[in-house]
Amino acid sequence: MKRLGAFALLSGLLVTCSGGGGPIRPHPPEFIEVPGYYVASVAEDFAGGVRANVIVSGNMQAYLGVYVFDALGNCVAWDDFGNRATYDDLNAEWYPPVAGRYGIDVYNFGRFESQAELAFP
Image 1 (cartoon, one colour):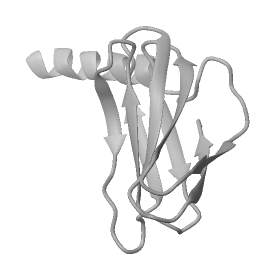
Image 2 (cartoon, one colour):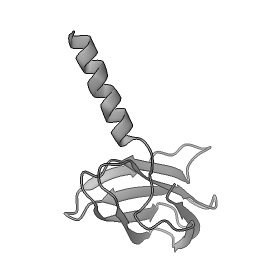
Image 3 (cartoon, helix red, strand yellow):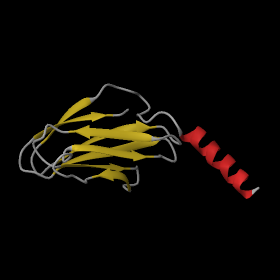
């Protein structure tokens, strides 16, 4: 009986949390310039209770990192892991508890400027 209840709870969570990962107002991917050893910031409004996702793809000039902050300044998601094959391809995923504005910082850890594409699938 406990397993059946746990399965029902898990199924309900998957149904309510599946779908959409983009901002409240969808828009096409955007390009930002990130100078060497610098941070470029953007802000987006995301819906609450559904998966949110930001993908960053650089132009292979430097190691990049992406950090997502809530309205209180708490880091809620990040991706700064890089290896030789994926050093400028990033994905940060989180589940905002409430709708709100989230800050997205793209860090350039190298000395060369990088043009990064931000997508919100």
